Image (cartoon, rainbow, N blue to C red):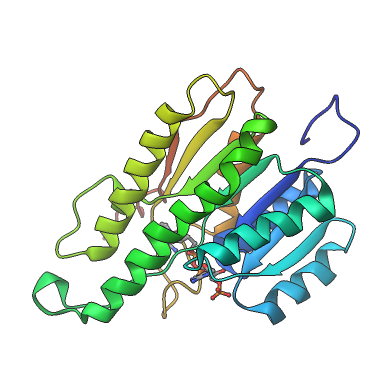
Length: 237
Ligand SMILES: NC(=O)c1ccc[n+]([C@@H]2O[C@H](COP(=O)([O-])OP(=O)(O)OC[C@H]3O[C@@H](n4cnc5c(N)ncnc54)[C@H](OP(=O)(O)O)[C@@H]3O)[C@@H](O)[C@H]2O)c1
């Protein structure tokens, strides 16, 4: 449960809530007693999810995370509506295009830097004052690609930046009571990929790790959770 001693449900903001990991996390959080704020650009998908989850449990805010003012306005709307913000899952992200550092279109790099790095940084900047007031919890979707070397991958570079931001902000927040968790999935079968993924996690597998981190007592600070699919069984002759 979100909090056994507090009768008011806690509020979780999920960016990138319109599909994949964010959507699965929002669904699981509501089932666990949280009120959720669903943020992404696709207003129609967010609205459908609110209707599914119930207007008492969820609200939708259309936001482009690359726009800092948009994110500031989002937090104002949350505080006006719920009067609190206890946890933030900065999860919005996007992938790149093939070609590596020798050949990928540079526009795809710009988009990834803007969404994956700056978008998450803006989410932190817009929410940290409030999280400090509530001794809240910040979670960032990094990736196994942000902890290992991937050949020619600007995506990996952006996720290394997310790992670095997670480590850096945790030190900045030392003594405030705010906890910081990096969620580092391996391949997850979501619309992030054009084709269905073999031997991958389901979005719910990652959502469970988010809820695991969120459900710890305030004295327990989960720094990072790397979650990978179990390797496929060896083929027998
Ligand atoms: N799938 C994987 O294998 C995998 C593995 C490790 C880490 N991750 C990370 O997990 C996170 C979620 O990805 P996913 O796999 O769930 O993919 P997804 O289903 O494509 O979800 C991406 C989410 O990010 C949102 N988003 C993208 N650009 C945005 C922007 N400018 N402003 C606001 N929202 C934006 C999308 O919503 P709108 O398009 O509606 O804005 C969508 O809700 C990403 O950070 C990704 O890098 C994924």
